[in-house]
Length: 375
Image (tube, rainbow, N blue to C red; front, side, top):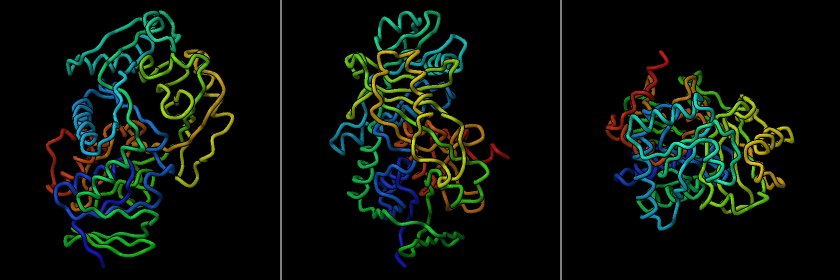
């Protein structure tokens, strides 16, 4: 049986970051991924992911995303390729909407540089938008988007450079833990380590029954539509956005690498189930939900459909993350339940998971992510 200091189960956005941070600290690391690296079966594909600084969800997230920005910059420097594109971010909706009020609160609590615009001002400033004049928009310059596929590649490449072993196309069949360490069985072999880090996305509940009641996989769909006026949707003119409108909570990006401007609806059709049960093929109904939003609020972006893609959220009951040790095994660390807004934090989450695995504690403020909140 091959032995390591730490085994990481799942090498997607969070697992790749954890493997890198562990290996950079001198740990002998094994990462195990059931699909390719990167792959399109989970939650981190689709080319880009938003990174926002004024987190409307909870101002307690802001220090973690600020640390993430620092670490993404460090990763760019060591990897030698741009990963973060700072277009600025727009959070818009009616003045009393959750997104606008939450974004304003985060800016106030953390004294973030920002500008408040009326809907009329947003429409005039960003030609891709057409929103009601009485809406409000919070513009913040530090956010933008991450090249998510390349972020995973960069973390894995840097982990390799620090001596980590990463094994793809290998499915975990069982694991055990006691005070002496952990053992992991796969369809290819057996491995042992002192500690285990579990970052298996929508499969975490299956691998870890102790937390399965807190983790619900959900299907989501993204669309890329060809703008009728492409210049309005390039990254110099079109910041990433979150929209809290009567039709739901939507988010989107400028055009990047593939044809079309990309956007989606949070909790798209509220379809939940096991990873195998959720339909991976987008439908005409999915497309219609997205197109109706764009026709109303971004009509210059509603040319022909270029691409549709399904991904998975893994939601907790309160939509906050789980970053904690296993309730029965202190040498098993859990990173799960990122609820559709986790990727931006991956660089810092990897640092937190490495802290918990090596030191049993972290200096990051992670109280809001502990399992005890569900008791």
